[in-house]
Image 1 (cartoon, each protein chain N blue to C red):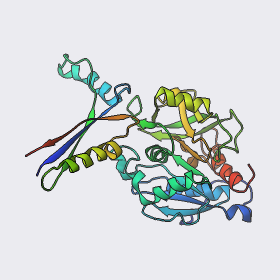
Image 2: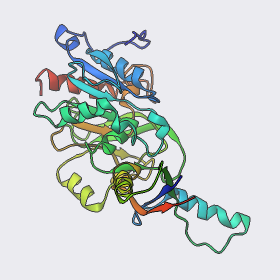
Image 3: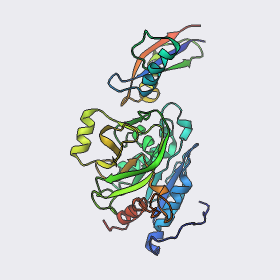
Image 4: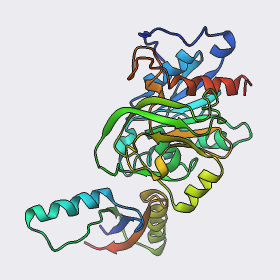
Length: 83
Length: 250
C-alpha cells in the first residue's frame, strides 16, 4: 500500500522547548557535534490503491487544515512513499 | 448533571428564580476532567448547569457555554485539535459568532480548543520549562468588560489554581500588538510567568467580549475554605459575570 508522508515542524521563529531539552541532553551521551535540535511530527497516510493527483491534493489539504496548526506550525514536506 | 454535595459554605447569595432560570451548558469531551467542577461553579453562582456531550448536534437552548479543562482526546495531535471537529463545536462556533453572541468560556484545555476552533487567536505550546505545573496563581484582570469578567474590578488581582503542561500562550507580534491595542488581553500572570506565555498573557477575549479563554482554573476557586488564604472564591466572579450579562445587568 502506498503511503503519503506529511512532515510538520514548529515555525522557525517559535522556540521549541522539547528540542532545547534534547540538545541539552545529547552531550551527556557524548554527542557534542550538534548545536541545535528541533523536534517535528511525521504522519503516514495509507492509501488503498494508487495515489492520484487528487488524493495527493486532499492530503495537502488535510495537512494544512488538521495535521498542522498554521499559527504555530509549517507543513514542510508532503510526499508519496511506495512500499 | 448529577448533584454533587456542596462542601464549603455557600456565600454567593441566595439564588433567585431569575438566576436559576439561566441555563449554562458544560461540554464533556472524551478525556475532559473538570466538567463536574465547572457545573458545580455554575450552580454555586445560582444558575442551572446543563450537561452537553461533544457528539450532540444541538445546544439544548443553553444561554452560555463553558468548555472545561482536561485532556480531551488525550491531547493527541495537538491539545484541542481533535475536539475542535466535534459536532457540538460547530454549533458553538456558529452561536458565538451569531448576532446573539452566545457567551463561551474556555478554561485550560477549553482555551486550547477555542484557539484550534479559531474563536480566539494564537495557540498554546509546551511550557518553556517542559514540566507540568500546578500552583496557586495570581492573575490581574486586564479587561473587566467581557461577558465573563464584568463582576471584577479593572486591575483586580485574583488567585486561582493553575495546572497544565501545554500552557505557553504564543501568537505572532502583530497579533499580540493587536490584542494589546484592542484591550483583548483579559488576564495577565502576576508575580511570575508560569509557562513562558508571551507578554505574561493568561487569558484573552474576542473582539465582541462574549468569548473568553484562559489557562488557569477559576472553576476550582469558588468555595470558602480553599486557596492560599482560605477565602477561595476568587474564581466565582466568572460565573456571576455571565449571569450579569444574561440578566442584562451589564
